[in-house]
Amino acid sequence: MVAVLVMMNNYFHDFAAAVLIVSVLLTFFMAREIESKGKDVKLYFSNVYTRMSHVIGITLAFIFMAGIVRTFTYKDFEWANAVGTEQVPAIIVKHLIILFFVVYGIIGWIKLHKKVKRIREEIKEGSLK
Image (cartoon, rainbow, N blue to C red; front, side):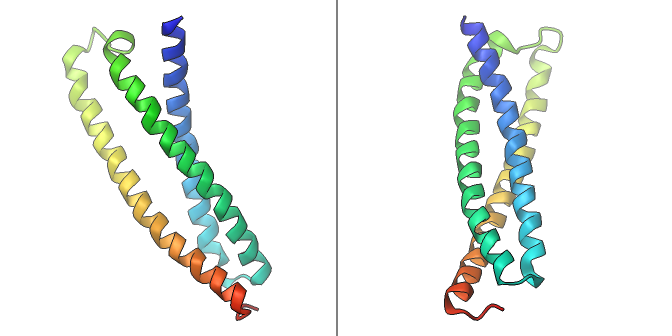
């Protein structure tokens, strides 16, 4: 039973990573397209951004929590004997690359949040057409 739960944890950990990547890219692409759009589109994006922020935040938190479980169960359930300890450097490199993209994404998200805040202020002031 524990093995099935660990397998499901690992599956959902990988699935959440894919959801995170797609959600962030979709939100960034949408943000780039709204600059030349009207008030209705910017208001719509502002609302979508709020929902996407929740999805992305929850997904990122799940990835960290499931990653902790995965870390503690790795040797028992995922360790490939054929590769042995030679897989450790590959895993370290993989996580360094992922860390780079997560940090880069957080920086981009902070910039995007400022952009959305500015758009919301423009909508409130009525300066958007």
